[in-house]
Length: 383
View 1 (cartoon, rainbow, N blue to C red):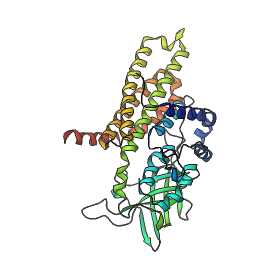
View 2: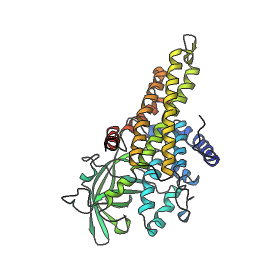
View 3: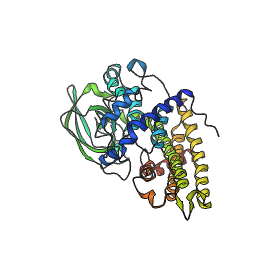
């Protein structure tokens, strides 16, 4: 079936991104993989290419295109090449919506130039060591002291936390109310060069090796009050507003990983010979590839429909949860089958299928686990 999601402008952008990845990422990727993070130069080069500013309004130096499709193309092309672009998704898909919706004119004039250029990468810090998904139980505090907030606490699993220049930190500015545990949380856009800000361990993950994931700690960090994002104590309500886009981004990533895995498996089985013939010549291989293609087609249909709904402002939280659940679970099955077709080589990190396998696993965990997605969907089904 012909894919109708993208037009000529989108495909032109795709070719630009594909050429960039082939020239600027693929040759260096083994070194980045060993180092456990991308270099900061990658982010500034992507800024020069205009990637970070596509959805940023023109008055702040961007292109002003209100569409998720360009972000999806970036994800698809990175996966196609078997590489990862570090914290790119966090910068644009997670942080930008908060900045554009909640930032004041003065804040956006200060922050957007560095955001668009890639010189200031943004991350968001919600999760704490002892709270996990229970954000209302966070213990990081930001106490008002004159024209500053004094920030103390710790965060973990912060994607982009090592290289970020500013981080949207969720902290308690007031105690929770007896009838509302969510009250009292605020969002502060913190400059990571401030005294008392410390990057702890860069966490050693089984996948997403070039995406720097860190532990952060704050000791009497004096954050200017002018860097409060939105209203004080209303942060929890803001956090839920971007969940549909975050989960859509994960669904797109899972689909793109599965599509890449199938491509790698087809290429490998055509070239690899066993018992005097290509692996692709065996009936079992044909059946496995056919099954993967059928599931991938369904996954693509779900993703495309969800992207169109999101661009139209119609993607609900339940629909986003459904798309994430279906695409991540389906991608897991496809990638596992494609790795199996590689035999022992599928278990070697030198082959992109191995990296895809490890990278994909977290898609059923972050942004809300598959179990949480099922709870959201079931609540809607049962009424």
